[in-house]
Structures are given as C-alpha cells and as structure tokens.
Amino acid sequence: MTTHNAPNRLANEKSPYLLQHAHNPVDWYPWGDDAFAKAKAEDKPIFLSVGYSTCHWCHFGEFHSC
Image (cartoon, rainbow, N blue to C red; front, side, top):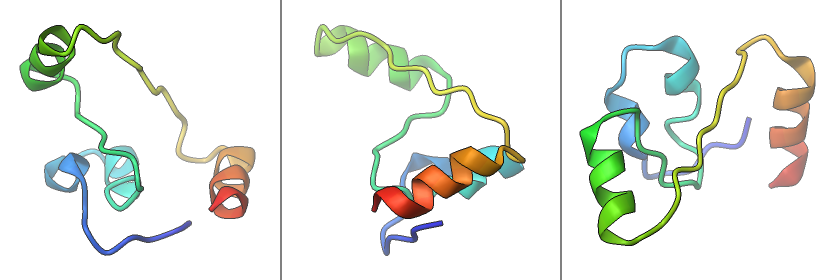
C-alpha cells in the first residue's frame, strides 16, 4: 500500500478499513454531513467508495497504480 506523508480525513475514523486509506492521496471524506455539505456547495456528485479489506486485487491495484 502506498503511504503519503499527510493523512486525509479518514485518519480520525475507527473503522480498520477506513484507516487503511488514511494516507491515500485522495482527499476522502467519511460518510457524514461534511461530505454532503461540500458536495452541495460545489454542486458536485458524491463519489462513494465501498470496499472490502481482504480483497487481494484491491490491494494489488492500489500498490501498482502509484
């Protein structure tokens, strides 16, 4: 898994799955009012990522795409 210096908003979450992505280069928002308020303010759709922490190909793709 690629690690970046600055964590994103997922660094404060309790979910082990979300914490795995706390150092991704994507500025992820956890599910909540902040995410919906930002999307509404910028008139942008919600991009929802649903994952499974033991998915081999997900980890493989993340490792080889950076």
